[in-house]
Image 1 (cartoon, rainbow, N blue to C red):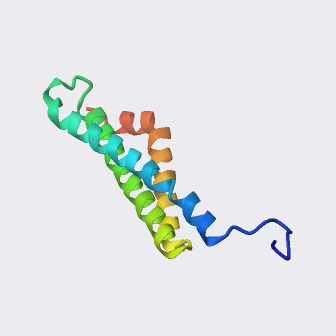
Image 2 (spheres, rainbow, N blue to C red):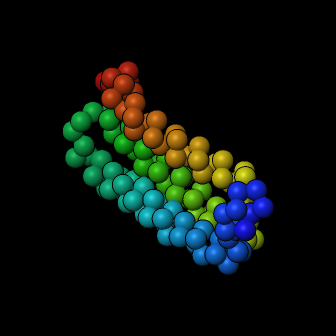
Length: 115
């Protein structure tokens, strides 16, 4: 137990087991992002909402893929070394926050960059 707060402390194996769940979660993000990119490339001529919306969705798919790769790398780092890397954690969180901001301000971005 932690001498300050009396909470149970995770063992390295418990930490690795919990962090190993990040690998398939990141893989899901990568699969969705790349699937969206491939779908946009395959049906680019069928897109009818304008170029700004097309590039916006394309950008979201790219950020989603990059965030998934950072989640996978953070999970792998934790599983291999048994401890967290603060730099990878910051990259992962900036990816999540960036994705949320882009999606949240999507309507504003589309009106600014509309055709």
